[in-house]
Length: 77
Image (tube, rainbow, N blue to C red; front, top):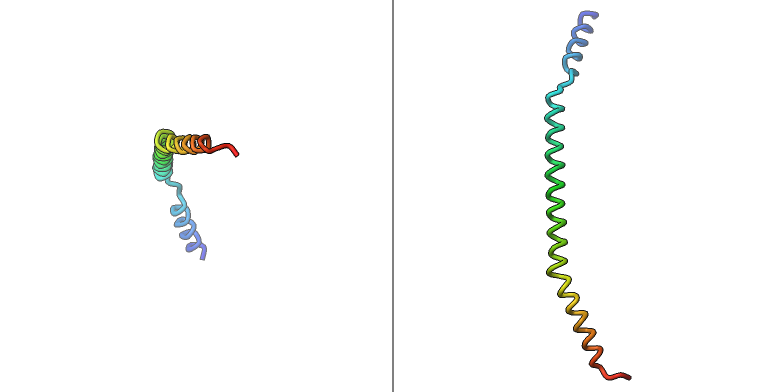
């Protein structure tokens, strides 16, 4: 019995050996994905901000100015 226990312990010791190369690859992979996600999020955020600033906001301001002009043309009660 002790011989099989020694064999099992040897197998377990070999199976649980840390693999530093995989850890480095995983860390590098996570860093690349994080950087990519950050760049994509920044690009999307800036694109939405520019669209809102230069395309949507002038239209909204023009509508409010048109409403204001219409109210000023109305006769006073």
